[in-house]
Length: 357
Image (cartoon, rainbow, N blue to C red):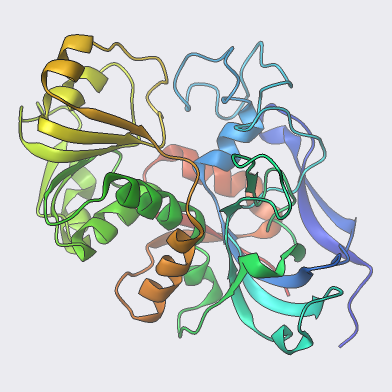
């Protein structure tokens, strides 16, 4: 079947409000370069990083939570550091989650890969980069899946064999790889773990992935979502207003930060490990160094991922060890409405994006 010259896509035209998301039907279909594949996107999903990049929340000029200006953007944001890795060129096609089918292969790629159903590794070290810390995020440093077609290096298009729908599979890459990266950094075993922000995409993924490792899971969420988290595998839940038990956990997986952050360190047993990969309640926190050194705690930031994190994740999916949690879905051209629904935070899990094909 011949490929069209143009496609539907949503362009991010700059940092700011929802008006910076522009649906177009005349965007050129990308051509795979050497070592790349072209993917016909079946589905994507909304993530915090999409919103944070659009608003410029990653800029050090922003000191508040991720929600206060999520529809309008933040004043004083610098384009020099408005994206999580620094400056970002516009226009940009976001969408870190991608499930689709390989429809073309660039030079050097085995053409037998054409027709494979794949998930895209959302974060990876760029091929040939001299800097060992260099990192590319699909939908940020390179165009992502809020479009009918996208390209990626062939090694990061991971074949998946599953009866799940494209929408269900697209709920996994960004959130579950973030959660699995945190868990692998913490070397979590059959221990006591506290998970904040547990009803979101990453938090609910962390609940499932922690239970897979035999951990005893305490999930922090709103009262309305506690029962559903128990069904996902949480052993117990705490409301956001509840006091956190002191000395009660070996590991804390934190996605919230904010003013209650010191309580999370007090919740750790001696020798405990704290891992963060988000700060939806605010990035500026207060640390009493005595708590850190007298209790022999380890603080871990988690962004970069070993390549095996994503291949492990695909293996879990194929084995049926984890399940998708999709609250609702929107067509691609309604991405603004999808982000508005995402920002209401009334859902559990992910908001899917159905891409026309």
